[in-house]
Image 1 (cartoon, rainbow, N blue to C red):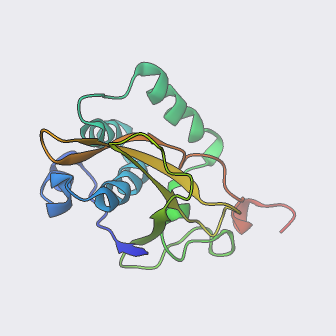
Image 2: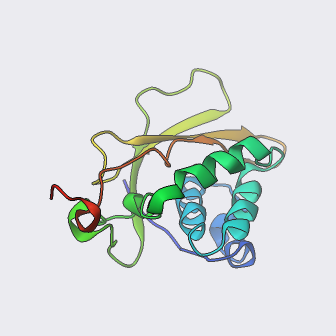
Image 3: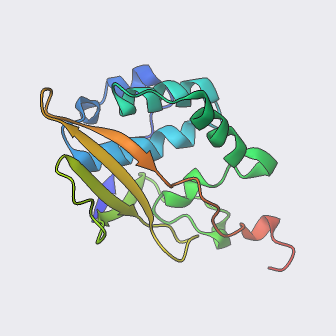
Length: 162
């Protein structure tokens, strides 16, 4: 499925979106991609957004350091790689309005209350998983784990072998 997503640049802007109610698991995946795209401009705002999406389980110091490490050495294009139309050939410049392609994962978690989605990228040979956890008392989905910051193909502008 192709999902239209907003690209808020702060937690306040994200909270103003209807998707921020977190009742749709697909919307939570979209907001996760959006939050990771904020890191390049404002890492603390990115962390606030991810903490909100994670609900009662905020990022640990280790997880924040892992995210910082993924952006070292100029890899700021990685989160853009999940936006529709972004590819190594166009230096990961997405089509606008922003969209992502996702589908329920074939390797769904057997446990009730979890849902897994695959997010596609033209810079990766396989889709990347995002796992959500449901909180019945609030009827909300929260980010449980994501593998969106795994390396993707190098953009043409940075590839000496292109």
